[in-house]
Length: 139
Image (tube, rainbow, N blue to C red; front, side, top):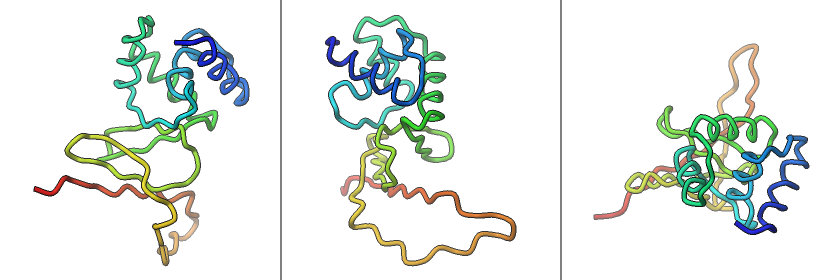
């Protein structure tokens, strides 16, 4: 990992008011160090850190991803009610979930049209709408 990637990670954390611990900076650099958005699972980020020779536990990765989400740096996208993906693009946008690969990618926002939502129940308000479009390869 380059010094530039570490600097980008440190700046990203500072912008959210998060203390730049060694482990946070390492994970931040892996996530956004090259300027590209990522969709990761805790397990895939853990493996990427391990491949870089970084000593970080899976529990630390989960806790760090949660802290990044709480700070507004990432958003969590849940698929099947149990599998969580973490997205560095925090703008509202739809996702494709590729069932055959268990992979999450961005879907084009400009092609999504939601004409109407149901009214929220009494005493509630709609906080957000998550759109995950499930895909499988044609046979």
